[in-house]
Amino acid sequence: MAREGSKSKSPKEKASKGGGALTHIDASGEARMVDVSAKEATERTAIAEGRVVMTKATLDLIVSGNAKKGDVLGAARIAGIMAAKRTSELIPLCHPLALSKVTLDIAPDRKLPGCVVRATVKVTGPTGVEMEALTAVSVACLTIYDMIKAVERGVRIEGIHLVEKLGGKSGHYRVDE
Image 1 (cartoon, rainbow, N blue to C red):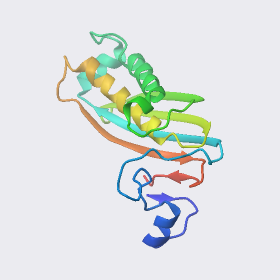
Image 2 (cartoon, rainbow, N blue to C red):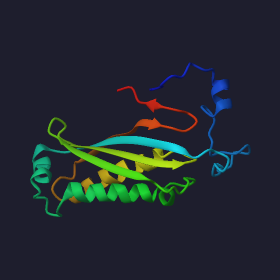
Image 3 (cartoon, helix red, strand yellow):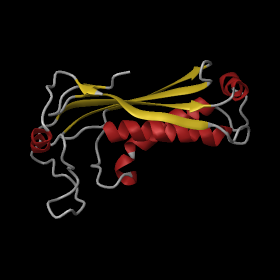
Image 4 (spheres, one colour):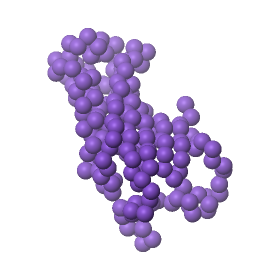
C-alpha cells in the first residue's frame, strides 16, 4: 500500500508528522478523542470494500429475489447507509459527522461466488470518513449474512478494507491492488 505522491520517510519523521504516531493515545498512554477544532473543513471522501462469499445456489436465491427474508441487497444497502450515519455511536472516539453522501454498491459476482460490497462516503469537515466507509461495508456484509444464514451457515465475510481516501492533510491514498 502506498500513499500517492509521498516519499519514503524515516520512522521518526513519520511519527512527527502523525504517520507513525497513534493519534488516539495521549502522552500518558490514555485513550483520547483527537481535537479537530483547529483543522480546516475540507471535502473528504473514503471508499471501502468487502466481499460476502457463498455458494452459487445461495447467490442465485439473492439475485432472483427469492430469499425467504425478502430483498437481501436492498436491505443490506439501507443497513450500510444507516451504519455510516451512526459510526460515532459504534466506534469509540470517532467524531460525529454530518455526512453529505453515502452510497452502497452491491454487485453479485458469480466468480466468487458472492457479493462485492463497496461504500463511498463524503463529508466536508475537519476529519476523514474512513471509519464511516468501513462501518458501512461491515454492516452491509453482516446484513447479507443475516438474511441468508437460514439457507447457508458457511457464508464468509472477507477482505473488508479501505480502497481509497481523498482530501485532508494527509492527501490521497489508494490501495495497491
